[in-house]
Structures are given as C-alpha cells and as structure tokens.
Length: 388
Ligand SMILES: Cc1cc2nc3c(=O)[nH]c(=O)nc-3n(C[C@H](O)[C@H](O)[C@H](O)COP(=O)(O)OP(=O)(O)OC[C@H]3O[C@@H](n4cnc5c(N)ncnc54)[C@H](O)[C@@H]3O)c2cc1C
Image 1: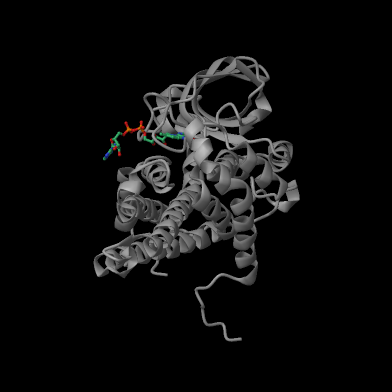
Image 2: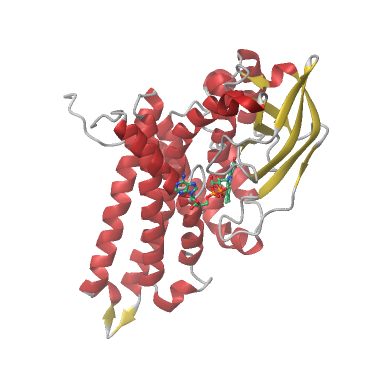
C-alpha cells in the first residue's frame, strides 16, 4: 500500500457508520415523526444508543467509554441525524457538556463524572443566559467562594436536554470586573439543592430535545467541583465549541442526507405527465445540486474532525467553517426536498417538512452563522488556516 491520501473512511469508520445506521433504522427512524408530533423525548432512541455505547461515544476508554475518535463521533451523530435530529442531540450534547471537564478538569473530576456519563447519565452545557447569547462573555450567573464551597446564583437559558441530564457544566462569573477572564466553570448535579428547571420551550423543530431554563438559587457545591482553574472557564467553554461545532456540522450533514435520500426515492416513484418526475431535467438539476452540496459539506466536516482529533492550530477556523457551511447546506437541501415532494412535502404525512424545521437550529446554536463568520474572518486575518 502506498501512503497516498485516499480521502476515504477506514474500514473501522465504515463499520461504525453501518452499525449506527442499523440501530437508527430499527429504533430511531420509526419513532421520529411521533417524537416530533408529541414533542416528547426520544426514549427508544436513547435506550438503543446507550445499549450500543453510542450515547456518549467520545468518552475515553480509560474512563469506561467507547473511546471513539472525533471522526467516529461525527459519523455516529451524522447517522442519527439522518433519521432524527432530536435523537442526535443525545451524543452531541453529552460531548458538549462534558468536554470542558475533559479539557480543563482535574483527574479526580474526570474520574468522578466521565464514568457516570459513559454509564448513561447525561451531561448538559450551560453557557447561554437571557442577556448572554452571541455576547457569551456577558455572564450574570454568579459563583461566590464560601469556605470549602462555591455558591451559585443565576439563570441559564436554552439549555439542551435540561431535566434529562444528571450533570451540568455551568459557566459563572467569579470576578465580575474581569469579564471573560473572570468566568469560571463548575459541574453542577441535577440533584443539588437549589437547582430547578423552567417549562420546555415550544420550538419550531428538534421538538424531541427538551430546551429549558435552568435556575440556580443559592446552589452550594463542594469547592472541588470547579473545572480547572478559577477564571479559565470561558477559555474552556470556547475551546469546547471549537470541537463541538464539528458535531453540529455532522447533524447538518445527516439531516441533509436524510432529506436527499427521501427526495430521490420519491422522485423515482411519483408520476406526472405519464412519467416519473425524476425523468424531468429541471428536477434532476435540483437533485444534482443537493447531492453536490451535501458531499461538499461532508468533506469539510470530516476534514474539521481530523483537526479536532489532532488538536490542530486551525481547528477554530475549520470548526466554524464546517458548522456554517454544512448548516447553510442543510437548510437549502431540506427546503429543496420539500420542493421535490410538491404539496405532499408541505404536509406532516412525509418527513421532509420535519427535516426542514429541524435543520434550522443548526444555523443558530453553538454560535449563529453570523458569529461563525466573525470567527472565520478573525482567523483568516490572523493568518491561522492551513490549506489541507
Ligand atoms: C433549541 C436551542 C438549543 C440551545 N442549546 C443550548 C445549550 O445547550 N447550551 C447553551 O449554552 N446555549 C444553547 N442555546 C443557545 C444558543 O447558542 C443561542 O441562542 C445562540 O448563541 C444565539 O444567541 P441569542 O439567541 O441570544 O441570539 P442573539 O445573540 O440575540 O442574536 C440575535 C441575532 O443577532 C445576530 N448577531 C448578534 N451579534 C452579532 C454580531 N456581533 N454581528 C452580527 N450579527 C450578530 C445573531 O447572529 C442573530 O441573528 C440553544 C438555543 C436554542 C434555540
């Protein structure tokens, strides 16, 4: 074998894709419409993913996890999103919530929480607040040291899988005058006294993933629940997003592929003017553009996953680029899938309108696509971007 770069998945990675797809065909896709219609947690998917160790595949083997690399984790999330974006938030949010611990946490903290995550207890990420969205450093949640404890007060907004997760990485200011350098990160447990949740938001899409406010009312936690160093929380939170934006890109590629697959099948079946609509060149050009863009988004996402795995210096650019490009593609492709189905696509009898609604969130969370373009421009102007 030459060492010529093949730009192809290894056999192991292909096997992961096939294994996840089999689970999704059996336990995720059949419930996706009902989960959306009833805005309920995808319990069947959660149980099947956990049984196969795909609920938090990124947890290293040393802590009892599957030890999936960044590309394998992307493949898991992509395949689940192809069937149901709501269910794909299970591994995506578990990675998002726990990565600050993996990046900055003490060995004791990793031992304590990563094993329980691998065993099935979820992990959410609490950065956003009512007044801290794109301006994430504008944290109002306060953590004050009191003897051998930290006491937290404040409100987090838009927290994915809140209420379902047992653990929460919470960003809070420990020095309000120092802005981002005065922010620290903590692990808070669902059962800690003073933690409560708002009602689930009524959303356009990803209705199977509960999004709720989380309230901290004099929550007293042991001092060793701080993640890493005091004042470094914002740095850990931003490093986390560099990696997890690649997983949002994976969600986007997955939902776009799901919509394309459905549109292709439909176009071959549906007859108008005495022939399959797939025979009309006007529709073929639309399908060709959809396939071309999904594949371009996939390649950029996998390239970003490689950078995430290696921790390359240009991950910040690639994570933002993959998330932004793939989510814009997902919105376009799912909207065009509705077009391919005509009036039928506009109804809940077919899955593509759900996919279109679900795709929209990938342009918004983990930083809107306007914010991704700010991030990319800063990286380009600073000269941080390799060519391959
Ligand atoms: C379903 C859902 C799940 C979420 N899950 C989580 C979660 O688990 N944890 C978490 O911490 N957060 C979560 N979020 C929050 C999400 O990351 C924020 O909604 C997002 O970062 C945008 O913040 P915002 O909604 O306050 O919008 P704003 O910041 O108010 O932005 C409004 C508009 O202004 C634009 N804008 C803002 N600043 C600029 C600028 N400088 N230049 C150009 N345009 C700008 C934005 O792009 C956007 O179009 C979730 C959100 C949703 C809807």
